[in-house]
Image (cartoon, rainbow, N blue to C red; front, side):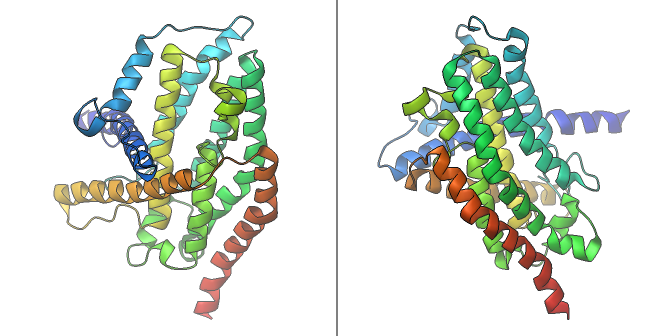
Length: 331
């Protein structure tokens, strides 16, 4: 009974839903503040110290706004997408190791489940645009699917490349095994430096951030697939996207930066692991923000052309190197 209660608290509070909801809002604040700094602006300032509570204030404001369903929309599907998006992002974070080598959910092959979840995000985006019965969301949905065709292979290749050593030594596709393999040598310090760069670009596309914010291009299609969403539905979608941001930053830190390696045993070790995990995830976030600030939006044809001409071949080459180099070293 007590163990069941502890497991429930781990899922709902820490290191589960509530922790990552707060972390997602915190990451949004860091992203906005650092992005403003790179552009010589102030960024969030008034809600809380240094504007720390601005993402939460925006969430509360949207929850209080009028909730409108456009005429002609598929009401059940249109209204359920925000809930599914939030549920999917919250389910995904349960696989991330925060205060130890394994997450709340951990089993053999969980890395494959994580990559499948990332694909489902795009499916929800397409359904959101399709169900809106509006021109701009429809265009945004089509762009998101076309973009998926460009970055999905590099994303999967970079993730599998990070697991290559673990697969060869232990025959495992478990995130826990990948973290333990990096206890003495981070993946990014070897051949996976290239894989990490590919992962960052693919994650930027998954998050629909500059230069891959094509499905939401404000100057072209208003807000893309988000155009018809408002009120509570928009609040849930934005929260889901913040949690997805924290998830991808945490996944990058786990696969390439050693994950949450505990320094001390017991409770102090769990606390130190959590702090290390957050710091490493912030490092990934700052790199993504620099990419966002340094580049401009690509057209959808430019994105697909870049992906299939350069990103896909390089990612496959990186995966082959990740598989072959350890074998050559052993030989």
